[in-house]
Amino acid sequence: MEGDGDGDGEPKGATTAVSPPWDELVSAALLGTDRRPAAGPPEELLDNAAIQTVRRRAGLVPAMAAGRPPAAPPDPRRAVPQAARRRLAQLLADRSAPAHAGGRRGTAPDLGELLPQWLALANERGMRAPAALLPALLDAARARTDLRPGALTFAGPRGLWLARHNPEWRFALRGASGSAALTDPGDTVGVQRLWQEGLFAERVAVLGAVRAHDPDAARALLAGTWSTERAEDRLMFLDSLRDGLSAADEPFLEGALADRSRNVRATAAELLSALPGSALAGRMARRAASCVSLDRTGDGAAIAVEAPHECDAEMQRDGIAPRPPGGRGERSWWLGQLVESAPLDSWPARLGGRTARAVVALPVTDGWGVELHAAWCRAAVRQGNAEWARALLGAPSQPPGEGAGTGSLAERAKLLSILPQEERAEWVARFISAHGLSEAFQLLGACVVPWAGALGRAVVDALEIARDAGSYPWSFSGVMGLAERCLDPSESPRLEALTAAPPEREGASPGAGSYWAEAFRRLVATLSLRLAMREELDARPPR
Image (cartoon, rainbow, N blue to C red; front, side, top):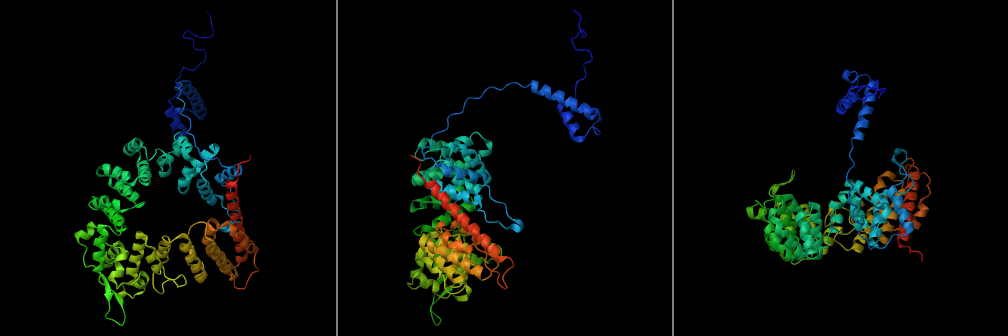
C-alpha cells in the first residue's frame, strides 16, 4: 500500500535528530545560547524544550491512589458565635492600617496585637475553632511563635489532625501545647509509648502533662530513662519540675547534683534551694551565716559581711559556680550565690530576731549592701516569699535608689511578680502617682491584664499630666502600646475627653498636641474593639 511515508513509517520531512537531554537544555537556557552554541539558536532551544516537555509529561505513570485519611476527631467544645467568628476572620487577615509617614501609626487599632487577646478570651470560655478558619489560624501560628500556645489550644484535636496533612504546620505536632493533647496523661500505655518514641518536644509536653496529673508518676517516668538522656535534654526535663515543686522531688534532685553536666547540677541546686526545708538549703544557710552577721561595734546595729575566700569542692557540688562573669569579683560572686540559695527564714534568728523589714533596713558595712540586697531579692523570687518581697520593694513613694530595699527597677518587677494580683497593681499605681510613667514601664509588665481599676486610673492620669505638661509624646509610645493591650475597656469613657488636640503650648514639642490626640483616639478605638470582642464571644446563640 502506497503512502506518504517511507518504509519505517516516519512522515516525510520529519526530523530524526534527537533533541538534547533536558539537563543540557536547562544549562543552555541559564548560560545563554552564545555560550552554549551546541544548543542551537534560541528558536531551536525553545522548540527542543517544548518537545522534551511533552515527552516528560507523556512518560508520567499515574500514582496509586492513597487511602482516605481518617475522619477528623470530634471537638466537644461549644461553637464560637457568628459575630465572634467574623471578628476572628478579620484578625487573622490582619487588616491593620499601615503606619503613616514618619512612623506614626494613625488612629486604627493594631489587629495583630489583638489576636492573642481574642484567643485568650475564647480559650477561657472553652470554645472550639471554626473548621473553615483552621488553615488561617495554623498559618498565623506558624508565622508568630507568640501565638502558638493560644492558637494550638483553640485549634484543639482538629487542628492537630489537619497539621498532620501539611508539612508547613508540623510545628503543631512538636509544640508543647499541641503534643499534650496527643495522649491522656492517665493512659499509662500511651504515655510510655510517647515517652519512648516521641519527638523531644512531645516528650517534654507529655512529662509536663503527667506531672500536673500525677507528680510521682512523672518523676518515675523521668528516672527510668535519666541515665540515657543527652545532657541538654536532661536540663530541659529537669526544668519541668519547677511547676509543682515539692519536698517529694528532693531525693531525685539530690541525685542530680552529681550529674555529669554542670548546667544540670546548677539547675538541680537552684530547685533544691527553692525548697527551704531541703538538705541543700540547710547547707547553704550554714555557709551564708558564716559570711553575714550582726555588727554591734558601732553606734547602732549593722550587718557585717565577710565574703568567702574560696569555693571548695563541696560548694561546687551544691551548685556554686566558681568562675565569675566578666566584671565581677570572685568573692562577691560566691557570696551572692550563697545568700540567694539560703532560706530567708533563717535570717531573723541570725540577725537579732528582727523582721524581714527590719533586717532590710539595717545598714550594711563596707559597701556590701547592694550585693546583699540583690541576693535577697533573688532568694525572695526563687522561694516565693511575699514578706521579704514587700520588705525589699520598699515604699512605692520612695524614689528609686533611696532608702531601704532595692532601687533596681528590674529587681522590683521580679519581686512584684510574687505578690497577690491586687497588691501588685496597687503598689504600681502608687509608684506611678508618685513618680510618673518614665520609670514604670518595667513595673507595668509585672501586672496582670486587664489592669485593675486603681492602676488603670493612675496610668490614664499620668498620661494626661504628661500631655498637659507638653512632654515629648514619642517617649510614651511604649506605655501607650501597653495601655492598648492592658487597660480595662471600662476606662474608655474617661479617655474621650483626651482625644481632642490641645492648644499648642509655648516650649512644647512641635506637633505634640496632634500626636497626643491621635494616640488617644487609637487607644479609645482599641479599647472599644476589645470590649466588642468580649461581648461577641459572650453572645448567646439565637433560639
